[in-house]
Length: 76
Image (cartoon, rainbow, N blue to C red; front, side, top):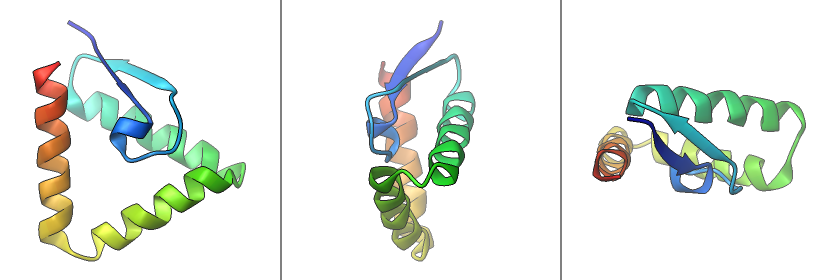
């Protein structure tokens, strides 16, 4: 069964919806969208990516963020 999450829910900056059957698929869609927005130099997305970069500097916090997002996805 497909589940839906928005760019915002996945740490992004807009309401674009992604639909996938697994968390890995939806994470990959979000990543592709992020790369497109990066190339377009979309200011809101660049700011969101900056926040994610800060989170990535602390592996424990990044791992917790991923676990939380996976649980959010599974709960849908």
